[in-house]
Length: 366
Ligand code: F0G
Image (cartoon, rainbow, N blue to C red; front, side):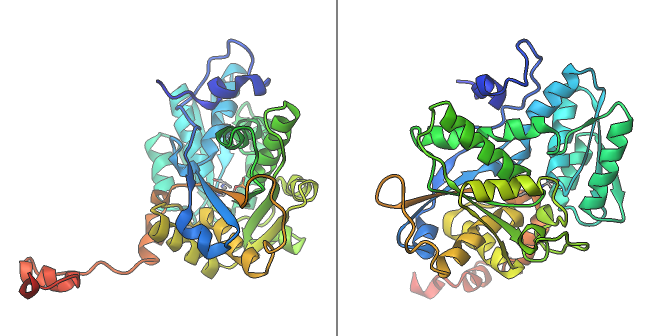
């Protein structure tokens, strides 16, 4: 069967897309939900951990869910161009969907702070890639102002259509569990669109009678870029997880609402903690994500160590069910993967040298 895109699959919950709209899709969504047996036991004995692997979307990140809606509607409204500011993934997704739609795409990015894979995507899809000596927050402000004054559709997550599409991730999770939301939903927080969209999705699905309960939302920022945790904007945000290097999130208040309405937590994790979770996901579960995507898992380890899960109640079954959204694919950022790993070993092109270097067994033992 052909894989449906999210507008086809969940159109009845997307009233912003009118009947008969020409849908611009790359068959996004319907991503796997993987049980993480190897990691869950290391976090807490009571936890059942599931990974929502959003890196398997067409452009390699969760942004495609919102982009199919935003670009479909931009085209329908007669726009010939879309524009976004980005730490890399939004631009890659916008470039792909604009190419699919046959319209122009302009992306504004912080120079030198975009992972290689993401930059390559925007370029090969034919977007006009503009880089500024400045951070994401400045790029977003400029993009807002330009799209306000020109006939170009803004496709950052302050465009409400983006959040409409992204909320479908919550629907898929509840559907996969047979109409039950997890006890906890964990994700990284940058510009705070995704936590806003997931919370909206869970609430809508419950109101529609498709899900019995609501999760508690757990969001994590990088310690060097944690304005929501610190309660004030960060002028010069820093983290190796460049996707969430954001000092003044656009959906700040909505993220606080999601936290408070769900009795959740927004915390922060250091680059060291993110790096450890990044390697553990790849080495212990075979799931390769980009650094920002590991921030949620790092946060789970941290919360568990503080005793957070010792006394919480679960809605369903014997264990505390946790879903972690892994927002982007590891191949987006090959530079950080190489840096975080052991170096490749150069060997002479002989069997002896290779077997020696393998350190598994020696020819004399065979
Ligand atoms: N994870 C990844 C891989 C991201 O690319 C982003 C955001 C986030 C998490 C945070 O999501 O902003 O909704 O809180 N990336 C944006 C971009 C900012 O431009 O690609 P958020």
